[in-house]
Amino acid sequence: MPPQPPRVCALMAHPDDIEFICAGTLIALGQAGCPITMITMTAGDCGSREHDQQAIAAIRRAEAARSARLLGAEYVCLEFEDLRIFRDNDSAQRVTEALRRARPDVLITHSPVDYMGDHEETSRMARDACFFAPIPNYRTFAADVAPILDAAPALYFGDPIQGRDYFHNLIEPQFYVDIADAMEKKVEMLCCHASQRDWLRAQHGVDEYVEMLKEWNAMRGAEAGAPYAEAFRQYLGHGFPQENVLARWIGERIRTK
Ligand SMILES: [Zn+2]
Image (cartoon, rainbow, N blue to C red; front, side):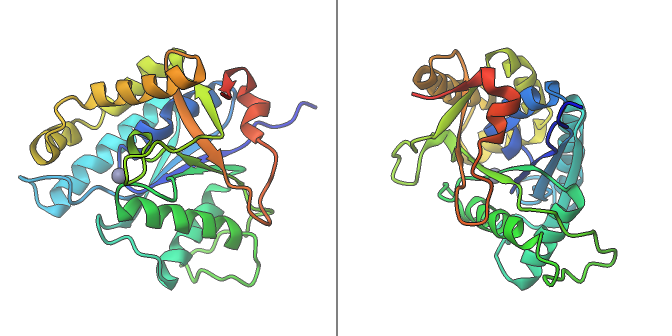
């Protein structure tokens, strides 16, 4: 019997982060038969100047769910609040429980260094949850406890926003995924987040949501020898899978310098 495609999970802080950072790769993995879960820590409750937290969260949950549907993925929101993602015992338990429910073989999260704290805290908690989830005595005290994982999933860090650390230095990826033929759908997924386009224009002066994405993926593409690419680093710490599982399933798209 051929091996089962791995279960893939993207766990990131806010609605639209997954689309920016790794949607092209998720599209490719979906085409390879991988079941996919998209998890955001928050519903994006601070991303508005005109709606209150509850109202904008409802809008953005629906936008994220619509984007996940385009991919045929499941969408889960862990209901943290924007700018209040901190690693403490309760948060670590919630994230671990979410992983035990999603049961990923592959987890993609934020770069450990990124432009804001929510992303960095999510990255750290995602890494820890991979380690905790297979440990029987690590209890989450959730109402309906999911079984432990058999092993830590293969863990990948996506690019920080625009591929840069907070000194504006480019992060050096381990490898790239050629997403040229997934770009149209990736843009379609990003455009589900209509409320964010308005917010970024008002708050950060970023007028062209889609142009920013294309420039970023074209820059990584130029490094990789492809029209558009996403960049990744695999976490190779003690106790984690060392094999690049993605290479087995979408190897024809993997590029190195
Ligand atoms: Zn974000």
